[in-house]
Length: 137
View 1 (spheres, rainbow, N blue to C red):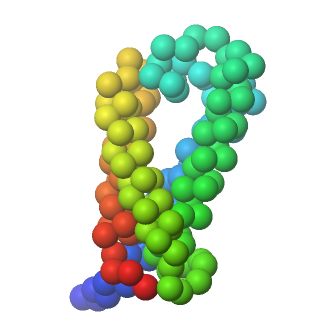
View 2: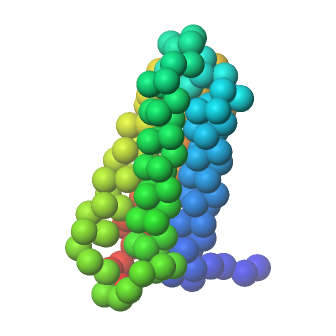
């Protein structure tokens, strides 16, 4: 049986987070384009795709892209060594955001958010936590 070393496990976790962040970027962009029903997002309380909602989805997609960069940098997959303190702090901010996002998904009236996105964001939050907890490079 093969086990991942600690650095490999951190990078594996960062890759899992990256994949899931990318999925959510796709969902947000599809929502902004009017393809993914907005009623399945944003707490399930929006029924109409307004210009504000479109813009909010695009901003969310950009934010998620920044989250990918932060988590990958913290895991040593991009960037320089030693890591700036800002990256270490930002990884904790991303982790906290994902924990709160998970709570929001489970509190949603949208069954898609509760039963699909909720479990996905738990995995993302745990993966981000593993990366944030990793030793400083």
